[in-house]
Length: 130
Image (tube, rainbow, N blue to C red; front, side, top):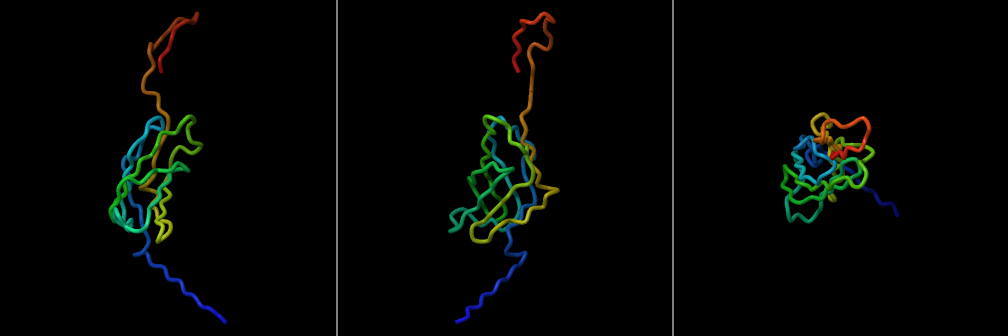
């Protein structure tokens, strides 16, 4: 017997990411990241949404059809090979999301905020706090 199947695709059924906030997070601390767009479903839906940034899982903590909030853990103990970039978003019942890359790039790098003291002896021996 022969079985036939069909496939249909529409942009209306495809989750889409159009913005990220904040666009810059320190890789040394965990942070909440909000993805804005459409087609994410709502909290309590029968399916799931998964988010990753450069291979780092971002645990979804809340979602509505137009917004997903996820928790990006700090990059420990080493910085990620790729500091950021656009997210990879997957909805279990619909597949991968379309991502507007120009508006959804996340930068996640280790940052030096201060060095104390700002100067020391050339002979050495100065304890430096970074």
